[in-house]
Image (cartoon, rainbow, N blue to C red; front, side, top):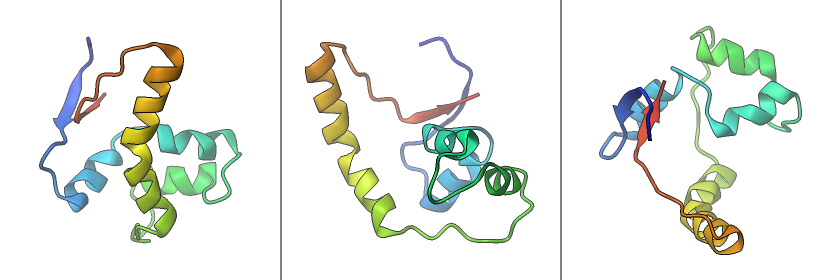
Length: 93
């Protein structure tokens, strides 16, 4: 993969990972940007990404299940599409 790597994420604490996550847009941010998220708005996402909010991100049960389900979803996607999924522990710019 040709990408500018911001940080290798394996071994990062949750706090470090959250700090790096503010440096860009991830897949879980897209629904807020498109205005279709039940949990976040584009403006609240922008405020968070630009460090203009003091609201701590508290992991909830839905977030925990999302993390638990990631490998299962990757495996299912690969089986259904026939595509190879390569798991990378990094954030890119």
